[in-house]
Image (cartoon, rainbow, N blue to C red; front, side):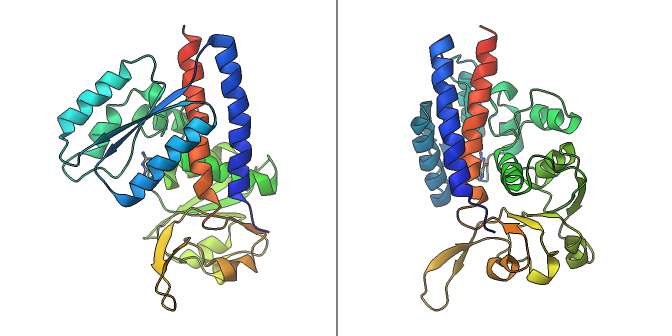
Length: 290
Ligand code: GUN
């Protein structure tokens, strides 16, 4: 079975639009998201455009701040300070990657944690680690859990989840979310020995390694749920055109697994939908104090 992330994301946006309308009617507040893009990275430009479009579609306010790639770290931090102190801004996202002369960790640390809709600030990752209420949780990991539950139902307890990848953006937070769902969690990575055998244990296999078609059919247990986070651009040698593929060898694995997310149209669309969910959540919390 193919898990349709595009449809799941569209459904989530419909539900969010209803909640946005309610917040407007009850409190007079329209959630607003400000995205900062430094430089002209082509992939980032596409992401930022899609974010703005979907933010507006669910009835939220979208602001974009585009800065030249010569922007200094200090200028970026000053900009963040203005947004942190602006009550009309509920969510702030700094598009990554940043130009080399800017330290991403310093920038992330400078975002007000209550407005950190990416969930990358140490305050939010700490809250997630401790299982505390009030964490803004990274968007792609949230999307992975929603899609896994769509196939398996809400109760994931006791399932063995294997996550390949240990990044702060996907691998680590998705592992924590799966643990919160009472899964038995293994985090595998580039130094893992016998990776194929480790993956064969998985009831839920999350691939977030960034290597095209890395996960092969004989790594996957029959009936497993496969969540493919990879977005890799490869050249089609026959047509010469670029195409997107995941971290999983989709065609071969699809014959073995119980369900799989496609690329494109799987986890990708869920990321922006969950970003909007976080923006609504941030706006609700900030307006609760008014
Ligand atoms: N670049 C690629 N993915 C992401 C993301 O989830 N958040 C941000 N801020 N930048 C990204």
